[in-house]
Image (cartoon, rainbow, N blue to C red; front, side, top):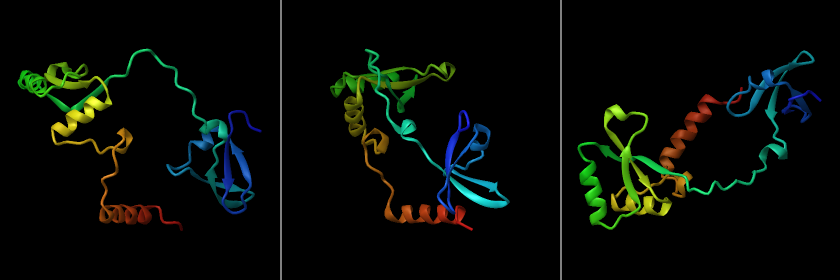
Length: 159
């Protein structure tokens, strides 16, 4: 066993071999690696041990994470109107704060008290969040999916 080794399985015979970090870094985005073994060019597929895939328990920090959105942000010229509109429609869990990284642009980000408040505000603005990471559903049409699939297969077509 190689210290700090990474397991790969040979595509031709299923044998699991270990490689060092530098070799592992040559793998492509799909987890495949081309290597010459015993004078033969072979394709290897990354194998993940259970230890790498087990989720660790999150440690509560005691404070909720900020839910920040540039999408619902506004310029300094609009911020008072945005605040008044939110208050008029009963939104208490949204506020606009200056963008910390670009303070010279006078852009204000929307900060929400929680995901439910962000979802409510997004629906109010007729802009529901369809990002599957945030609990929405994918919005890719069948036709768009097939076009994307064809493009990927064209690029990553097996020799």
